Length: 393
Image (cartoon, rainbow, N blue to C red):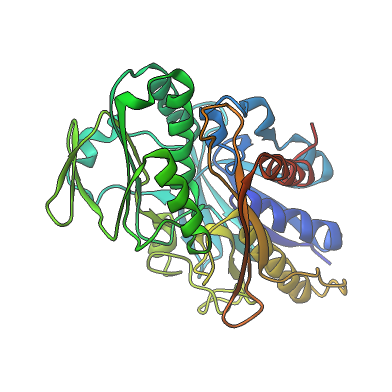
């Protein structure tokens, strides 16, 4: 019997989570192909620590060679179009820097491409995009690092857009990392640091009180329930008309799924799923969504992405008739948020929090006291994912 063709769009935590989970229990029944933009993966949770020199790129980047040696196939390029009716994914493949459009056919498709940072709704963004830098993308975090380590005075503006967006605590983590660097350099008193948040409180809500207390001690100004609607060469305008000047801008743009999802009729802003446990498209039994691009009623973070991958894998194994024991999985997690160091030491303290989505309402938990050991725990957690899905270092 011919093997079924499983194609996965996205080589991140969700995509590789599905790839390994299905391959490990059904490799005789399925050919697994992962389509991803780059021939490497760079982890996200610890990127704020690049600002404080507590993290390094060599510990964050992994290749796909070991997964390929295992038997998982890879196509490197950008998805141009999905045709669910014909079961085809069009990819602009770039194996030799000369893009070639390639059609990849499938029996089952998993859409897990992550998010797009889209500032197109903000006036002036297209002209002034380069003035902005965030911790969310490798090149941009490097730019932000250079700016905060060389500037001597001015105003720093950090921005969080309306939820949902990837990694809820990252804007607050960014603000505290910037504070720590400026304090460490002895120039903190020369700067005004402002966190503008489109939500009614810093995210995630379970630790909003801890973040606010930390901000008060650090002298960071917090503006909530207001959005940035315009970006100029040295200023931003909020939706109530207030104008704030900046020297350094760390603005997270609104998040959305890639346009090819909407164009394929798989969802308007996010990939529509039948339920958090059944991640199939409501329109197509053979198309699944997973990770940050999926419309799930949970925060967009690494743990939820991986759990959605396991739910997806369980349904695929059932459809494949693998006869395998399903993976044990539920939507619940323990996470950590970096909250800098008030003394300016390059030794970040973190707060631990959790959310259990198996209860209604979800049950939150936290230790409100930031600790250095929690930063180490987050590092071990992140490295465990990299080792499991890519290769150990």
